[in-house]
Every structure is written in C-alpha cells, then in structure tokens.
Length: 87
Image 1 (cartoon, rainbow, N blue to C red):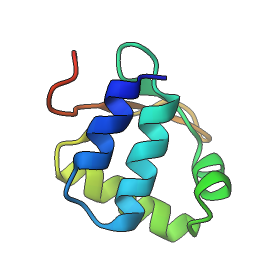
Image 2 (cartoon, one colour):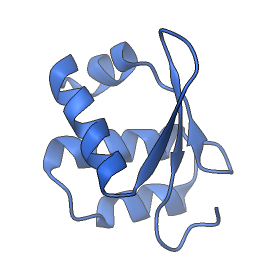
Image 3 (cartoon, one colour):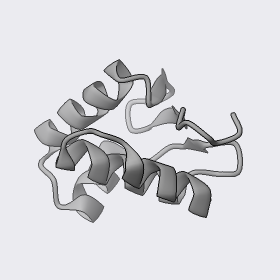
C-alpha cells in the first residue's frame, strides 16, 4: 500500500463510486501503482453493485486515472496514473 497513492486518489474529482473504487485500488496497489482486484472483490469490499463497479472502472479509465490490462476471466491488472506519484 502506498499512502501517497491513497492521498492522491482522495484528491481526484470523480463521482463517489469511482472515487471509492480508486481509493481501494490505491490501497491495494504495489510500489509501482499496480493492483489486480477482481470485480467480485471490489463489489464485496466497497458494497457497490457489480454494474456500478464496471461503470466506475470505465469512468476512471476514460479520465486517464487507470489503465486496464485484461489477464484472466476473473482479474485484470490495473495501473494507477495519479498526479504526483512515481509511475
């Protein structure tokens, strides 16, 4: 977990559900800003519906805050792109 990434995630100007997902991803990210939570994990931890999780991820990706790499049917690799963080 990177406290810097979490702080930067909180500063982003996105809707609440997208910010919740981004903060959780920042909390789970490694030192390079990568994480790989499943949709089910994101849904379970944040208490956001799966459709809202997908919408939030698409919003974050469109805003340039994350990139997504498809890996398996159950998980993707997400890289966070938050201003002020080492990428």
